[in-house]
Image: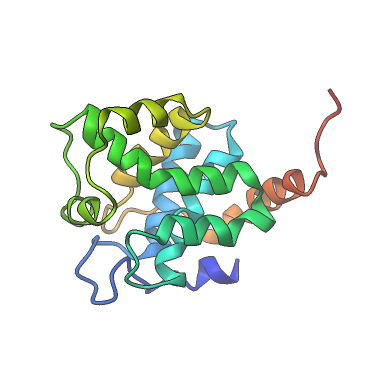
Length: 178
């Protein structure tokens, strides 16, 4: 929660030339969109909340921010959340490949080049074969939509019980026997 609170006033670019909302509002908006579209997938929602923490941890590293965030959240939130966070950049590249007419924010279009650009055919096939590809695409779509200045997406503290639930499941608690 401390790291998420630190996102207030932190931006995806050190000079604030990137997306129009700070990391705090962006995470809340992304998570809220995912809660609406996938109310039972708490891990996906939490991945939306934390997916851009890498921008806070390593400012200016657009190409590596997903990996930094995934590494940071894996011990607490588990492998699936970390995997979705890691895949949100390849999902952007995939969508840019299969939907070339798709509009990206100016900052996302700029960082796409630094992140490897559109995928070649083999990369796109490999991404599509990943068991988490569909969820990563959903996360990416919410990521792209969660950049609205002034949108009230709730408060961070409302997410504490969801984060605690996901963390407990990741630690092996709260799982129902098969």
